[in-house]
Length: 164
Image 1 (cartoon, rainbow, N blue to C red):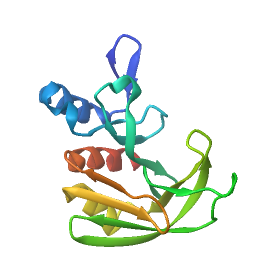
Image 2 (cartoon, helix red, strand yellow; image 1 turned 30 degrees about the vertical axis):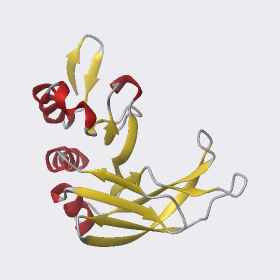
Image 3 (spheres, rainbow, N blue to C red; image 1 turned 180 degrees about the vertical axis):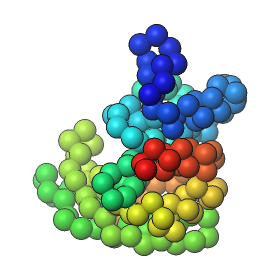
């Protein structure tokens, strides 16, 4: 952990990401930015950051036992508070497609089913996210996420180094 401001510490993998943001200046505020996930743990998020204090995550990647959790801001309609146990999520990075089986969980804030998948750190999807320019993530029967991936190589490489 590194202390960057009084009372604010960040994981070591976030330091290069934050340094890049500082050098980029306010001109990048319209593009989503990679940053440590405020939920904590060893995770990063790609977020709309016009006001970073209330950033809206587009994509979250986190270290979990045995892999990397990938949670796009894509959703499924819920049936009451129920979500399907398994869902296919199609990730399209540039022109390459990566269908993955994932899970859905009820999100009280949106009353929708949030989706995520866990993959090995060596999964071709992780490599594509690092090298790609644009992502479309769409759960079967749900709303898709479309986002640019600028800065993902350095951010994801840092996360993977922390995952061990």
